[in-house]
Image 1 (spheres, rainbow, N blue to C red):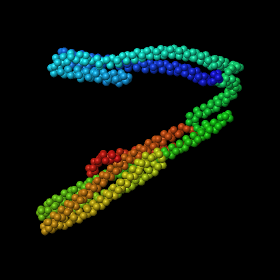
Image 2 (cartoon, rainbow, N blue to C red):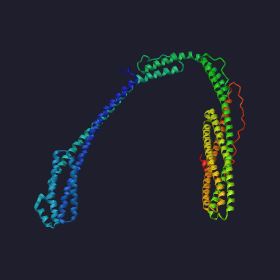
Image 3 (cartoon, helix red, strand yellow):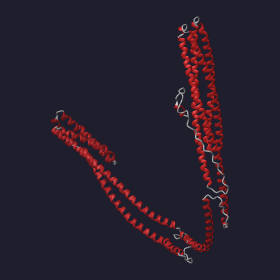
Image 4 (cartoon, rainbow, N blue to C red):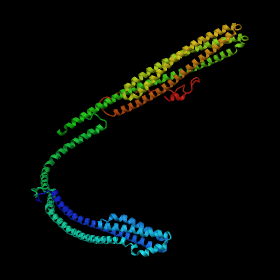
Length: 611
């Protein structure tokens, strides 16, 4: 039955037998050591009880001796030792009582405690108190009269009975411990001999059933490895792993014979494979050089015919893809050139608008200055109305000058209206250009997405410029109306000067009205100046956005050129399309008005830099 087992099962049985034998020995050995441990624990407990019994007896005798010493000498030093004996006794008794397990011995311990407490109460503590009260002679006489009743024998004798009991118990545990140790040693020796015998028996059995057959099988495998295919194999009829190995070696022997027949066929396949690899290597080398026309035309073995078809089809698709990329790059390049040219045109128009706006700002500043002068003259006229009777002729001359100044202001206002109309047209053209730029960015696809955002911002700023121009025209219309009113008022003043002598009070009131109107006109001109300053900032922002648009167009053109250059490295077999070189883009000139701002415009440099 053992021979029919598999090798793992044989090894498992062998190790199981060894482990079982060792487990039995260890179990017996553990039982012996557990008995030794229990005996040792019991012996230690008995030793502890004996030690504490000795401490109790010593404490009782110490109390008695210190008590007698104090009676004789009345020295307080004895009382300190007497107190320590009392404390040691009480503490040791509390620790010892739980350790005494025998009921009779525990009764003896309780008897000793009662006698000790009675001796303290009747003799020790009472006579010590008597001596401390001055009755030393009386206390000594009471001790002599008491005889043996003052002794502590009744408290000590029960302790000695317990000590004798514990000593006998300790001797018995020691004898049991020695017997247990002897049994453990015998178990260890006998079990070791039995375990060695079982191991030797199993080793011989495993050697005959496993080791020797493996050695024979190893020799057969070595013969097979050196080319001997006529070997005879033993053990193929076994039902264990060695039989499986023998049958596997038999299969190897048959496979070696078949291998020789397959080597010739493999050599033929290798030659075909080498031919295919060399052909593919040559065409892939041409493909890596950029030649997309190197299709495979040579014949290939039937096994690799599909590889030829797949290679040619892949090459054709790659050729079409590269051609499409090249055509798309050329188309995008043309669109980017148009976008760049449109950006340059927009930059030039923005510069022109900035120059016109600067001129408008200067004209508005002059009008505002003249209105301030007119206002001051009106105030002076009102202040000097008391002396108007003495300077009628001079007043009429001043009125004439005021009429002329108002006419000049009216003429300047008409010129400002023409400038605002020109700014409105420029803003409209700017918005049209921004819309064209957005259309061109849409044609460019993803590459023009950033340019489209910039074009939208330019369009929004152009619409704001149109709104500001409309507001400026409304303000100018109001100003022209006010100027007409001022001209009429000055004419009335001129006519009223002839009757100043009769209507001095009316002339003073009229002069005050003229001053108020001039102040209102000055405020209106100030609002026009603020609107023109806002338009100037808007134009500057437009110029910055146009510069950004031009830079984006130049970058897009460079990227498209690089893409076209990379695509041209590939030979697709088609004629190369001619690339038109656009005219060099002109970079917008520096802002001619950035360095010189009219004093009428607020110096707010951070306003447009925050854009």
